[in-house]
Image (cartoon, rainbow, N blue to C red; front, top):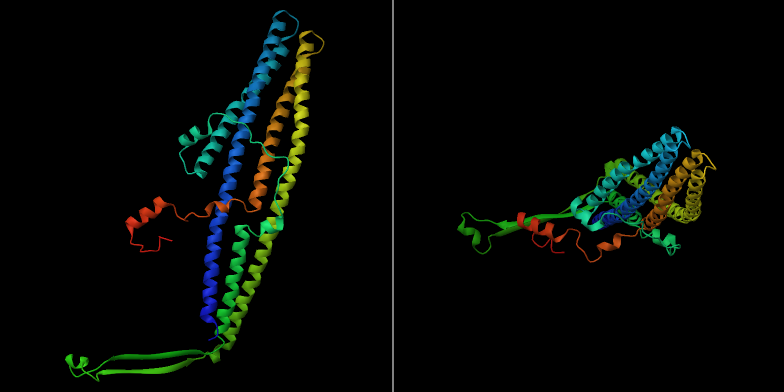
Length: 354
């Protein structure tokens, strides 16, 4: 009469919805991690390509210094400096290869496939994915409310709100209709004769009138938990807004950084060409060549990192807006192969059909 069971059903429905939304939140995280890991792999591969290009360039520089040393034009110091720069650049190759292998293994885990299958899927080398200069995201506030974790937090609040109603119902009397029906007789056969039926019904009232203090305090406890969950919900929304803003700022600023670094790389490449030419003609010492070659490698590495962050920021923005959970639409929570294994093990009836 006082809504105990009705509010209990509301709480159970809200908890079920929260668990379903938690599943969708995992999908959002998973798709975002897959995209970020893929971009990381391509960024590392681009950095490796730049390192290999610089190795070839520095090998030519070493040959030049060795030739000039043979003819007595320079001292052995130029040769050793050139060799030190070359070997230091070569040392970056196994380091980057290790990072690429680990990133590929991480991606194979996220995709639930053996690393050998992933190798065939990705190929040997690739380029950093391109990103549009502008991203259409709609109204962020509306999209944030679609985030599964935000909606899940909302359902948890709804479930706790219903729990207040369940606790409040204990303040009122509970009405129970008890009784029994049966058959009586002096022998077993007499129980099936006419008039052998018997039974009684008795209404009961249960009212914890002497426990009002404990019941009221329980209502207060449930209300305090509700207020706590409201605060958690607000924090989830604020954190979602922060993630969206961080992603958008990173996306825009990284694009500006890429533009400047592209100009810097072009200038560094020209500087290397000029320094090698002037060194070969004896106009400058080898230190200028070392500086220009080192600057080129650093600028190219920064450019690859910035290009990767442009895509990563865009992925983070879409993930912050809750993109990715839609892939569940029309699909079962459990894949068909797993369902078949469960049916073979246990009689689930019709529970696994829907």
